[in-house]
Length: 538
Image (cartoon, rainbow, N blue to C red):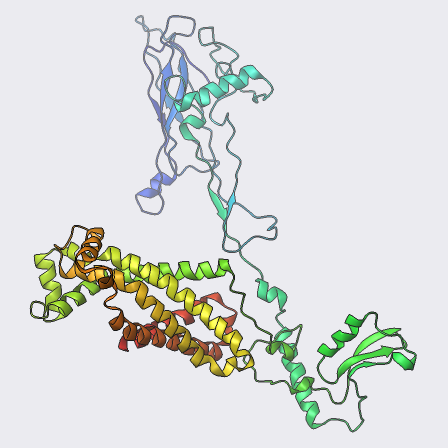
């Protein structure tokens, strides 16, 4: 408000001019809409009766631009009976409100993870963003029942955060329990929407490239080429023979401190050692004429290592110790994967059992599917899901953990010969694991098959189990073990053998998968799929 006017008997109509963009809307080039507002007047008897209390913006519109002329037309108050105009019309002006358009990163910082977006905190609009602090009533300087000046001062008044009277007044108007004040709302309670922004981290270099500069690989290959060429054009000048340490002892040169330092020299390749440099007064690394540094394969599929050179292509690898924590992880992963897969495939097990137990009624898979769906309903396809889930939860947990434990045990017992005994180790571990799994799975499968073949045998799996034990004895639960043993042994041995041989071949063919998690998971998926197909055929 610029002028409250006087003489109003009812709230005047407020019309705000549309943005220039609204004219282009008809052409479909740009959208724009006019803002809308309504006025409130003082109606109680007193010095301010007939004046405009405030103008409330209902719709801020769309398409207004900075510098655009926006007119606000407020209806004039009614004329007096004598026709003389003693009333004064209210006037107002529009103030554009801005929203955040861009956020510029001035300093990107360091140490952020690329896979985790960063939430940006943007300061909220000021409490007085839509509360006109130039208005003495809004600023809390004059009560609404006291005489208010018709014209609102144009001088800018800023909310003093240290003034409790003003601060409390504005906060009451703005928040007011989220309802707003004075019959409508002001400030945040009406309009405030916080800025929501996230920064996506873009890595300039990943940890691998940070450790290995872009030109490291080419430099090492260049050096390897030079070494290979030097073997053909080696100078006739004999290089000194270097083996471990030259100097020390009776030579009068200083010895290396401590026994451990001398022992470390044994780790050097043949022909690599230390020579005492009299100029530098210290030992330096030297290569003799019989050095075998250039004998390493130049065609190794492993990536070059700038710190260790060709020797880094033959790193020392060792399995992590199978402690209790790791063993329990194998148990849990095997249990979840095995039980989950068989639970999803329960309908296939139901149809298979129907075809096996009553081939006359269910001559093939398709007819079995139709008969079960028509006569027993869709829910019948999940008969026996509980024993299936529990049985393979136990079977998977034991099977995967036991085979991993036995493989490591047999590998350690075989010692240096383990590399040539990979297949016997896999098969023997799988055989023992499958034998144990047959005994753990048989009782659950007995209950499942009885539940599917005879749906009315009992109300639930506990009832089925109790009736079998009561009528046939505990041994009946394990009666299928002799049939399970050859089936499970062939299945498990084939599955793990195909999986291991497939993944080993793929890792040798695509060595980059050793360094890339996604490729490694893809190889495991391919190996598992082929292993499952081979095991199913067996």
